[in-house]
Image (cartoon, rainbow over all chains, first blue to last red; front, side):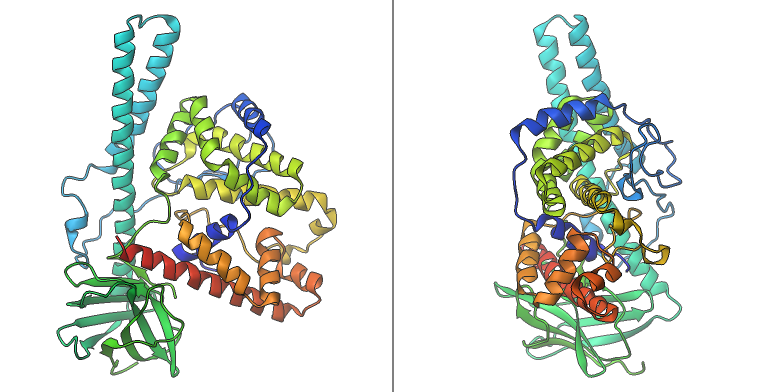
Length: 276
Length: 205
């Protein structure tokens, strides 16, 4: 099966949907002692071109491929795409290569303090305290930068997905018109074999406990493409999978929070693709 | 079912994701206290899943040790931008626990090559790993309880016992086609539970 984000979340959730049992108290010391007896693998080359091989050759245990942390090649060419207001990405975002140095700087600082302290190089307590506060500061900076970078990467993945849909050779689009009383709302949906991309403007704000839900009608049956809320400016964008057949209608309805299996609420947007 | 709202988006419950990533960085520098912190944050989830799968405390403890040893050894290779530590650890726990089960029941190793695929495979390691929020976990728990009995049994055998669809068919005396339908239907239901929560959490941001 293809593994999209929600499927991976579901697999993770299944792993956590078990009775939570604290491990026996003695296990902690045993695990820490056993683990730290093992040598640490050398880092992979800095140009990530291949997935790391499974496990480590040194210990001969039964590592499976799933055990290796992931360092895949990442796309290098930015894809210009304006579907999302750029406000969410800070203008002066540091280049990823520089971001990734922060943790190493931190590690180096930690190591320096550890060595310095143990050898008596750093004798003044004040100096140790100063270095410790520098580490704390670097740690906080690194955390903030990692968060920014992760958010940036997610945005880029979304944009690339949307661009792939919009650039697909079989893409076609259909407008959605606002349904009274939301007559100001407009939307457009792009459907291709690469997925579906929906965008809307001037969506009314939702009452508490309500959500918008995107639908296609295929073979007379409603297909849910997820729930969403509008941004404060009334805009929304949704990435979804390609509908399972020719689309007879596209609609956005207001539903109870969490969504429903079949539409029940008021229509806000409606589109009738001309040709499919 | 699989909609992803770009405007109301929140990452699955990884508020501690950056903290974990930092722990891995410190571990890579040989900082043993970072491993201890990682253990304190995640050992209960790992032990609980391992115990659910292997059912023997001593085997579950062994799985926990393997997972943290692996995390220590490969801490230099973890890319924080591509994966969430919590999800990675849990995935390792499931893999190791199912390996342990298979070693205990050698007959299960006699599976033909074309039937090697578990009914629920591990997450694809080439894509970013994500972790479920507490709300999503609760939804999935509720959704499992509400599944029709035969679907619940099928999905539990697939996920917590790592059985292939053929093995589930044999275990439950059901035709293979029926088992496939049951697993697929159950996963669709569970995914809807995850999808709806994911977006509604985002709405509140």
